[in-house]
Image 1 (spheres, helix red, strand yellow):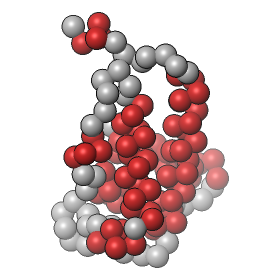
Image 2 (cartoon, rainbow, N blue to C red; image 1 turned 90 degrees about the horizontal axis):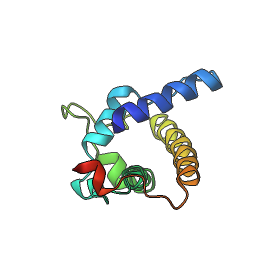
Image 3 (tube, rainbow, N blue to C red; image 1 turned 30 degrees about the vertical axis):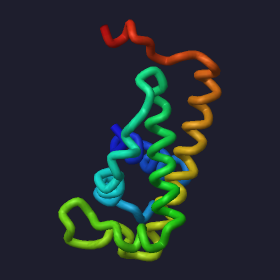
Length: 120
């Protein structure tokens, strides 16, 4: 789900802004693959918490040079951010996901998105 979301945001940015972002789909997949399990914890009635957690992980990757320099692709053949142009592209995707997330929060308001009835 996260990979598809990030790839869609990347494609939309490239189409709307007529630019080519340097980070590849495989790079995005690898960032999600390397996301620690603690980021997958969320309240069942608040699925947007998952998006918040993805944003927190992405922010950690952007802000922590040691982390971003050491993250490897899924098959361990190289580091994800092997070119200087990839991290700014990743940051652009992060910024756009923030906009999408903020819009979803506003649309949700104070409503619970899921209830226990959805799981019975």
